[in-house]
Structures are given as structure tokens and as C-alpha cells.
Length: 343
Ligand SMILES: [Zn+2]
Image (cartoon, rainbow, N blue to C red):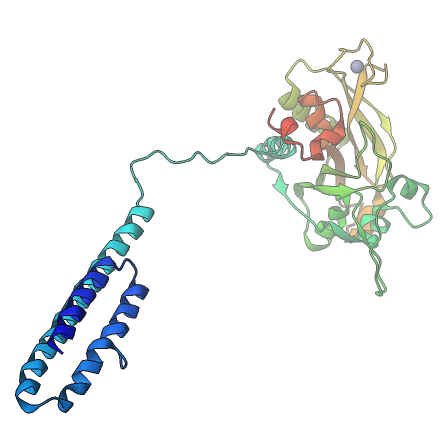
């Protein structure tokens, strides 16, 4: 019996010292101290021994049990410690190391130009007003002197939204749609600009897109004239393209103004010599506008005998391609980073 105890002691010491995981340690514990463990078996059989042997063996077996428990506990603590050390080693961070540089973007060329034009108008006392891109047919067309039968509607084909309401909704074709919305809720005098994205259903090419940015302007006061409009147009173009830029004003037609005008700037590529961009004319149309049509005032609830208005539109994308000399309008919304990184 004592021989057995010595054997158990030797084996247990060796096995516990060899163990490298906590699971294996538990298996070893069960092997010796579990219900059917080697040492447990001996402790159980003590009562069958002759009385003189019983005490001695009992004592030794109990000592061995305490010894093995102690070894197990030590080993458990050791494994715990080394495991934590590996975790610490794995998760260790050198906080003094320089970080990984995160790529920084910049503003899109359209946004840059839009903000530049907005800043010019704000410096002249204008407020900025926005409106919905999904617009009622009323504000986009009818209220702007463009009834359903009007031929100019064909030039502004867009996407109509499915609906079961009395009013028809569409993706707005012009930010001019904001005009009557604003006038219904505000009294003159005022001067506002209305920037935003508009939509047209048309074939795309180097100078046409299905989506583009406009910035309309509207001034309503007791006395405003075409001379004011011309002054505003010239000021803005000079601030954008420099004092030497040549402009010309000519007649134009837009249903919501009467009379209508258009301001052109000289072609920035050929300086009036004629090239493909200006279609050999030497001039580029940038600034349509005119005197607000009495029908528009009437729809908005203004008396056109009391108030006068001037309105205009700036194609923000168009200014961007002129200013940055971009050969194809479609590049602006292509999302191509090789293009965008140049700005
Ligand atoms: Zn040209």
C-alpha cells in the first residue's frame, strides 16, 4: 500500500509539472483526486486495512492528498499568469509610434464653385433659400407661367413620380420652382438666391447631363430694373472670372420673365477667336434672366402694380467647367477619383 502511495506521488508530480493547459490540469486532478481517482481509491480502502497499518497509511495518504492539491493550485496559478502574459504581449500597443495616415478628401468642384458664388451674393446682402427636389407640378411649371400646353415644357422633360393624389409630383427641372413657394410665405422687399440640384430627362453629351446644379436669384422691390440685373450679372462674373472678362447682354426668352435677357461671356478658351466649346461663336451663354412676369406675381399673390422683380439663373456646373477648363460636363458627376483629385 505504501509502495502504491510512492508511485502515485511520483506520477502526479511529473504529470502536473508537464501539464501546459488548464484543461489538461483538470484532467490530471480528476485522475488522482476525482471520485474514481487513484488516490481516492486508496483513501477509501483504508478502512479495510488492519488497525496498526490503518493509521499510518491514512496519515500518509492524507499528506499526499494535501501535497497534490498544493501542486495543482500552484500550477493553476502559474498557467493563469502565463496566459495573461501572452494576452498582454498580444495586445501591447506602442503609443509613441506614429499612426497610419488616413486619406483626407476635399470639396467637390461643384461645391467649391457653389460656395464661391453664394459668398459673392451674400456679400451683396442676399439670403440663401432652398426648396424640395421632389416638387409639385404647380410650383415647377404652372406657377411660373408654364401651363400644361406650353411648348417650353417639352424642353424640360423630367421624371414624374407615381402618385394617387390630385396633385402631380416630379423631380424639379429648375430651382425657379422655389420662387412662388417663397413669395407665398414672405413679403417684399427681399433679395434671395436659390441654389440646388435639378433634373432633366435627356440624352447626355459633353455639355448636357440629367442632373445639374442651378442657382437662381430673385429681387423684389418697389423699383428694380434691367439695369440692376445687368449690374448684378456683371459684378458676379467679374468676381468669378476677373475684372477683364468681356460680357455682352442680348435678348432671350424664358416664360417666367418679360422681357428676358441673356448675358454671355467671351469664350475663355479661344478669347473670341472661335472654337468647338463656343461652337465657333466666341461667346458662351452663362446668365439668363429678366423682369419677373406679372403672371408669376399674380400666382404668388403679389400686386404687380406695387412691386417690381428681377430674376435670373446661374448654371453652377457650367461655371465650374468654364472656370476649371473641364472638357466634358459628365466628368463632374462621374465619381472618378482620378478626375476629382485634380481640384
Ligand atoms: Zn471658344
